[in-house]
Length: 472
Length: 162
Image (cartoon, rainbow over all chains, first blue to last red; front, side, top):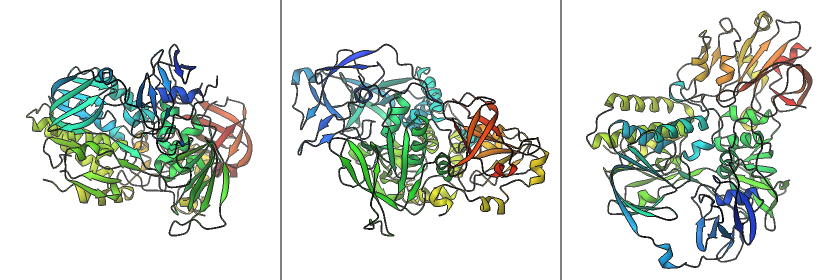
């Protein structure tokens, strides 16, 4: 059987444990207990998970963090399972889903809803949610932390590079190391209860419903911190739904969380920080990056990241876009072309690039579904990635019981997300009357956050923040 | 094509703006060269330096090395998230460059590696002077290579094993 698992890596090691077995369309697949279904299938060379509901086009994975519907399959008879966040179990039966899912046995699917009261409910266990939970608890509050992934850490667990920012706030430390430290701290804090694998999906008059595979819980929190992160943006081009086209973040999930090679030859689309960093990480995993293309006339990310891949022989092509993914049921090549000032492809400049994977890093969009359901006052702010909640300086939204932090409150990066989470967590606790952490701590964090944003790279962010940081 | 399009920094820019140490300084002993020419919010190199040899105006400033104070101790190389710091040394019989390296396999001391420039093109081969295999979990490994041509110091920014 094909095995795309990475054996050795300069930064990471995987303790996979003893193999388990799942059935995929009648055939046996070897998996490891910590893997999710989509990852185990990918490692075994299965890259198509479903066919689309109308035209039955092949579909593979896209986001790999439970945000899209691209990897939905039928698992143990239940359709529409997001296999990228569903952990494998020995003996699981996985089937390709053709078209729409058929509703399973109603009695088996609904298993009764439990209820739970809590002071602070944090939704999302990424950098913002982890810090929010820790600091709300430190200030004296009881906390429940929900995350839809099988493990905490959000995108931090994929960041093998050393962080930028202030040496006072983790700079120079790798994201994976920061994640480990925070997750261990959460585990050692009895007043924080973690619900892993729970997706919060519904807002019912102040109560929030969340569920995993087997349970549904209705939470009654006094304060909610929404730290749901972001989802990768799609680009428009021919065959952009073909298996082999996916977000740069999905490539990171595969190789940095699960130790699985995303492909053999990768074309990166987008030279922002995500595109540049993931290109570097692909090379560290022993994968060839055939080029990085970028529509803008300049590299968007930090130039030191661009230099890092350039000195390894990877060519960055600015003013280029992707026109087409070539292949039948999987990417075999990409057609790219030069673009003019108006981002229109220039006829005659098309070229074919041989690759088996097209990674998109065309920006992120805040995951604001819950904030929208809660009917908060949102503002469309292009500088921050899309619709974001209006708030005060301490991340309190137009509903005084709801806070937003991290990418869900505007696309920025992990260091600022952690600081926002801390500020929101403390404020939620203060608003409940808990004062175990002095207000000066929160004020200083806000001051450091402003310092970090004072440079030219954050100019755009600051314009966006002026539009949304408008509440008292 | 400029650095902003390719990621390949122009050596004339570095020379004219004081990013490269004067030759007399390189002949005295190892010295750090920081190729970080863009204002980004980052400062671990400043706090890593025990000799106050890295000058930066606020967290978004551009780091400049005080070549007189710098001892070439490599503390900044290990922490730089941009892998943008290198050591030049022309004080020994053979000139050398030290680069951060985060790939596998690591080269071995005394072995031969290919030298790569800022654009990844080969600049010939060289002998590995030392390998500082830091635990890559928190720091970057450092590889020092020595060669005959002192002019290579300004050019070599990466190595390829094999």
